[in-house]
Image (cartoon, rainbow, N blue to C red; front, side, top):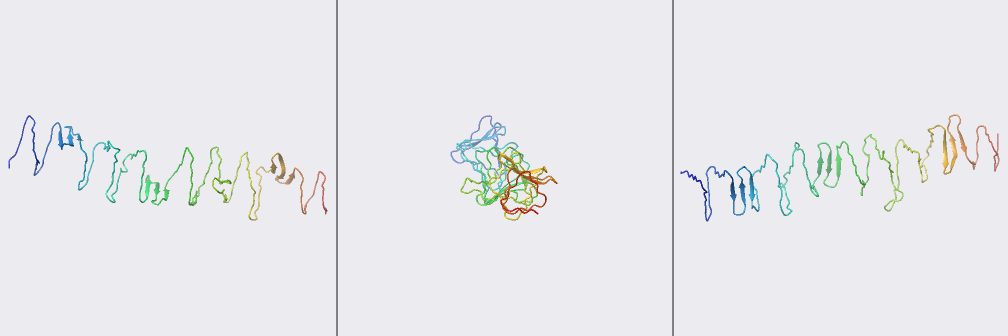
Length: 297
């Protein structure tokens, strides 16, 4: 076995009209102090002598090892297509998992005109505590969330085309506040409807239904009825009188509730059809007219 050393202060060129093979039973080393170039007559790998590597003229680049591929630079990794509005596709084989980032990474950023995330089964977004789950069949849930705020600068609509809308239907002993701040109108139901029919019923159920109104009062535009024998208790918080008024006429019927001085005042006549029973004294300050018999005992 002979060693073959070539030392020259000028260029050394190997030319062959057919195939040239260099085989080494151990290590083959080819280096250039100021750079090196390897390739064919179209594309080449370029080593610049400072450790940087680039390619020139390559058409298709395929990397298909039989084992793993590790890319671990000390700096950033940039993958960019330079022409033809070309796509970048990362696709694990079969049931392999595509993993982006880890729990120690600062952020994962996705920027595009449109971003589409599609899963065959459930799609879960979580911060480790709360989970927003698209169940794979269209069912959507938000669980384990602490505080949820929904704020919009435009209209916000909540509609269900095939089922009821539930708010506060879990057994949780907390209040539900609707429109507790701001100058606004709060509407529940409609008598006209934008579709074919108005709302059929607004039902209020509670141990106590408390309605408080300011200077504008309470306006009822329909009849009031009870479907069962009920007691109606009218309590005046000022302990003076309950007054039934009409537009332009005050004190049509006044019920004085002062303790010990209870009475009923009317601003006009009292028409009674039927018997009147009086227990106690009857005092009048004007005339009384009777169209029938008067029995006084």
